[in-house]
Length: 208
Image (cartoon, rainbow, N blue to C red; front, side, top):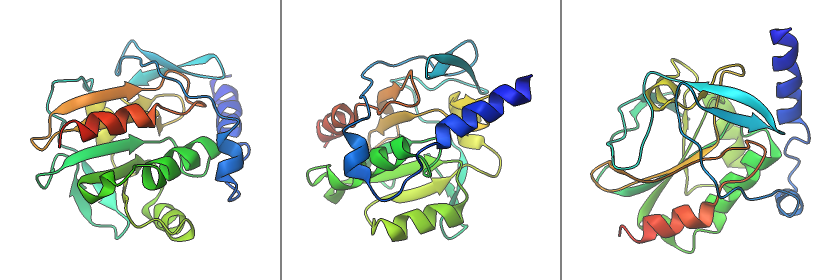
């Protein structure tokens, strides 16, 4: 029964995969301005159906972002806690091969009003680095760093952002300051909805 539910959920998540029509899709996607807690005991929903979160710890505003090794599109290990002295917007998506994740990533890249000159823009997902690289190339997107959590799920577990039944990351936006302290966080309650990216960008702008 559990596997049937997971299969249905994945089909729902992947339905209407990106076909290069982001602007058309965006108009039909709601923006969820709410947020839920991360980690054990918390849930996100998919079309109203609850999906439990898990992880070794829970990300919170005011705390230092936990170290976690991810893979770059060149298959090199990258520690997400390394800020390089920059304010960062970390956009977390379940899969780039879905319309909501596609729109979320395009908004970060194309509607940041020049923030990408001073703020590091990062997208984290469970997609393989090869898929992330293909997405960036097809979208002609060169102002976002793509990082994959596919290997050990360190980022998901360190922040309580693992959707347990799907083995995917919850949709979230994190803003960290130059010292790697979390200053803004939204864990989107309904994963088929967009996050409030403009609020995250404003939070980043205020840290410069």
